[in-house]
Length: 294
Image 1: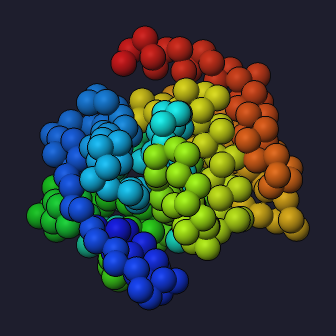
Image 2 (image 1 turned 120 degrees about the vertical axis):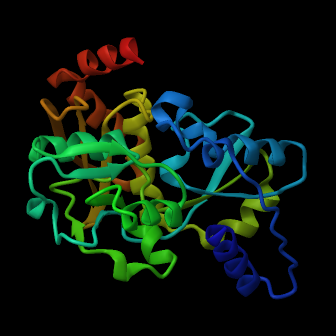
């Protein structure tokens, strides 16, 4: 809802005479909280109901966290806008400890992400990683009740909701490489609506859009979903996208990594090149084993 309000405010600032209303909806991803996303259908659970509203005309726009948007967008939809990114990194949240390194052996860490789990396990195999679902308030309440020694969340969500004080440490991307699209908001429409795309165009942030496009291309090429511990993160340096990507075993025993760079105009090809580099290192074997076990 914060995201929808944020986009509405941006549109009303651009077009003061425009009336923007919000159609509040609950997705299956919001409702199923007793199982991990990898076991109940993955990221698409957060967008399906919104896409149905686009198709039946009850909504013209859908606002998404880009990390929740499946890499393969159906042809009847378009993503004309990716907005300026908030902090893309992961945040360490605890009431007792200041960092992952401070946690004693056997401490329970909560996360909803296989990507985070694999990267934490690689560096801290002595910790116990347990699933953590629900909205931000629900997750923080579980921490406060003592169900977890610490939890790991997206820094962007905490900052957007005014909860920065709950962050004990930001995990640098060298430790926890972000998910494709993390920290960025995207606006989805039905395909072919050039008029809506034109109205939305001022909200697009070119650098963010280029980096997220490259990241999503990695995910698409590797069949990325919630069942794959996959990270992809790009930044603009000296006019080029510098893209890092990782894929690993859920237990952290294997972690493959690559870094490539190229022009923003070739963002999709750059992501595909990063995926190919990971495949050369053995990513397909890991992915095939995960698909068989899903």
